[in-house]
Image (tube, rainbow, N blue to C red; front, side, top):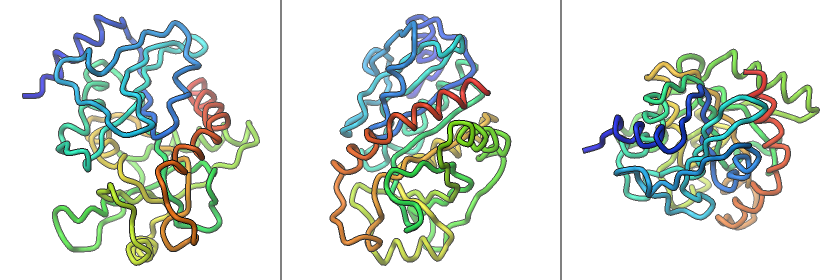
Length: 262
């Protein structure tokens, strides 16, 4: 049985964290946490019954620290449905954050671009999401935009911060698929038909849970590759990690600016 109260107690005892902002760091994007001062690092295995991150690019630790005087809790490593976890296990970090009193959540991920105008290396603020896992029905998935899942004010803050930094920040809709295999060109065409712009194997469970818990949510994707059928190039996880790392400097700069504004 999952005991979120015990997890929160252990994290607080090990970090003393009392902030209101948390960040979930996607594949290859963990470098943001390295810039936090006064770090207290908590390996996932030090948290009772906490799942383990098994995918390359997800180191598996919570980092509590400070960014220009603002307390931030960063999750370096997330859990995916394809790793064998259930929905309520994937979303343990979000429920833990809420129990710790966090009410602002920035979710990041590495994703595949379904739009030729958004090449690898592009950063995108997510305006809406679709559950394209077809776990419950074969019907076309619904697009969810706006509150409570995509906070309009935080999206405006992100766009303003990107403008101040002279960074391009695209906007679009994220499609969640089960993985771990990449999508086929036919599946990509179908998601484009539904209004999808980027595709990935995570994030939507976190968005849904955070929204239901009343948290203010901002999701930012780092587009690391073109989706199947958009480019003749073979898709690999190595490309995802490599592109995410190359985009790390501008990604980190944007996150820092957003947190200082929030």
